[in-house]
Length: 491
Image (cartoon, rainbow, N blue to C red; front, side, top):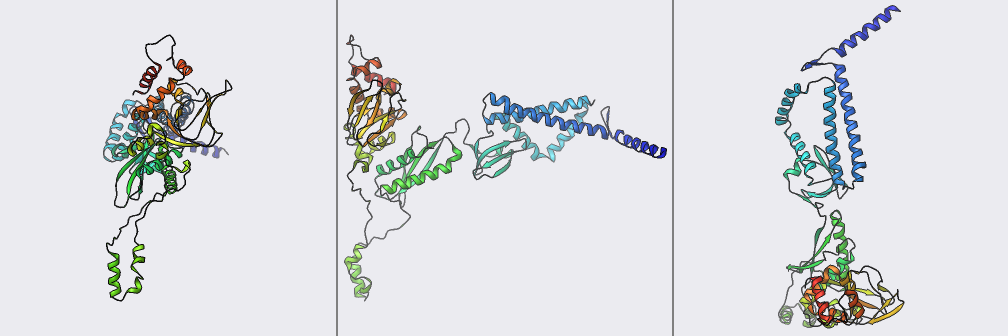
């Protein structure tokens, strides 16, 4: 029994000598296996503590400060590295290691980085640059080398991108420094989409413009401001090439929005019988009768029963015209020409006018705008009849017919709607948003005069505007209102 105890003591003594025997010296401090093991455990503890603190900073402190996701991630990563560095320095000093003795080792490691670890060093420096410059942040939607995706994580060595197909791609940080990158989310996420559309020669460009703008305004993810635009791109070999330009604020959904717009465009073009052509070559015969006689002389009369039937097969395709006389089926150009101050506009002027507003159908009995709602639109009646009511005073105010307008008081005052407007029968209105009204009034100064003239007949409205004073005769109400419009809209 004593022999066994003695043998066990010798084994433990031998193990203690193995673990405590100095393996090498770092300055004046010797390092043994036990010391290295302790340092390793302490380093792991430092990493875990620094990671926990950085997560607390990101999910607690920074969230309460209402910082965006990219800033939270960048601050969290930087704080994690700083805390880890400080913790390791404290561990080394507490172990009695003189940090000045690590200078030589640091120099050797630096040489290794310079020769054998060039890529790792480049990615390391690039990662630090990305984190501090904030030109690319977590959550940004970017495009790099035809790869579209959202930044999910930025580390010292690499960046993880989640593509629109849900794939995670690991990209070395140096690529972000050496390659041109499109950051769709940088500062302002708004971006413009170009949707090319080709139509057959002979198609009315104004009808195409109306169809494309209606399609754009039907897509909820398209911004109303800036307004959609239509460009006549060029005369193609087989088509008139247009471009629909729309603004969005979710670039990561650009492909989805383009698809939705293409469906809407196809529907609107088909509703108007506008042909979408395909590349083709047309063969024109000047004298098909002479060709028929030639075939008959050569004994091929059976191929062509008569010259009339052959000639009937050669025709020029024409756009089908809408036969219905209902205003609902009229194009916007014809409806606008029913309004007095637009009846003399050319097709080119009407095309610009259509870009500033859109038509909207209201069935009989439907409220067009509600009392006390925000006043952000101006309305012109293209067809139908509407009535103006005051729900607060519980009384009828007026009936408005084709060519008349309403909604101007709220825009001039910047106040909620002063009355409720309801369609008395099926009505079509030309709606102009606040941000497009200035452009419309610049192009149509006679409309600004009509607004001023109409308002000058309303004493109560003038009193609300501060433009009516029975004791003052220096300027007429019309002149005062016209100046107010000039001041508000810069015209």
